[in-house]
Amino acid sequence: MAPIFATVNWTDGTLDAPGMRSLVKKLGQLKQVFSDQSAHAQMDPETVVYRVWWWEPVEAGTEGGLFWGTTEILPGKVGKEFFMTHGHQHAIRDRAEFYGTVSGEGMLVLRDENGKTWYEPMRPGSLHYIPGRVAHRTVNTGEMPFRFIASWPSDAGHDYDVIATEGLGARVIEKDGKAVFVKDGEQ
Ligand code: PAN
Ligand code: ZN
Image (cartoon, rainbow, N blue to C red; front, side, top):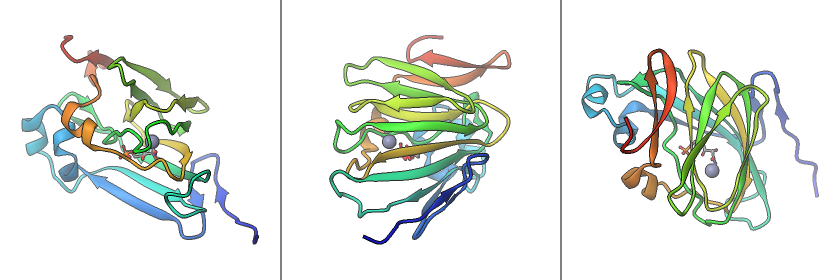
């Protein structure tokens, strides 16, 4: 097998890989994920919220393979809610994932299949194991771009439907100048 060669810059998370893929998510594509609909309506739908660059060294769907990617969430808020990713479960539910923080500060919001919701603070160097069957979303709670690296199974797939309709059971909002994790139904 020919060697597969890619490089990652561990200081800023940037990736250089053969056939690298990327996507951009703008505010207009994330309408339903933020709670303050009137604040959302007043913002420019072209505002970039996050970007993902990733490497698929094997074909998507390959059992036993791995993918590698960098996510950057820009700083910002919709109303009091910090910019965040859409959030998902893996389509093959038992597939786990690693996240490792490169720069900035954020929170990893998690929800298991029993509806239990919790979070892990993300800081440069923090490493996060997301078990299978756990829905996940990341939030930029700082004033700088927030970047983290992820590695996930090539057959995991992404299921966005549950998060789009039900959310994750909690939101991260600014209160008195601080990022606060607030469970649904709490103040
Ligand atoms: C990550 C996420 C990435 C963007 O690579 O896909 O951070 O978040 P959304 O997929 O929720 O938009 C990952 O968890 N892959 O499985
Ligand atoms: Zn994932």
